[in-house]
Image (tube, rainbow, N blue to C red; front, side):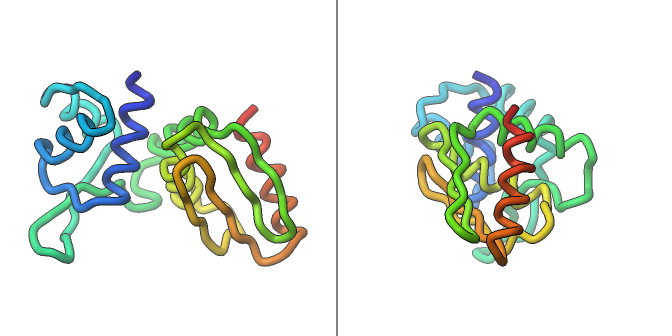
Length: 150
């Protein structure tokens, strides 16, 4: 439950400008998570979320910047490992199927891990696409990603 809730938090803050714990709680409730303020506060601390300037004014929750915290990387790997169901190469693209609703969290994890040669990611609800420069790099990524889910 905690893992799913924290993955949902990462998904929510990547898709929305969440400025308060109350807003985060409301979004979590919409997704079926019944949480208390204390639980959200602990999750924010464990995920090491920070507040950054929002384009709409004020501050919003965000994941820590890359390289800020070495303890954060294992959590990202765990999110990826627990969410991914299947990995398949299609030329220079890699299609990754996830548990329903978790593609954004898994794609976010890949983006934050800064794996070499990734041009970008594009996520839907239960599938995301990893774009690589060529077929060889895509095959190499498939090997790395496959090891991450074992």
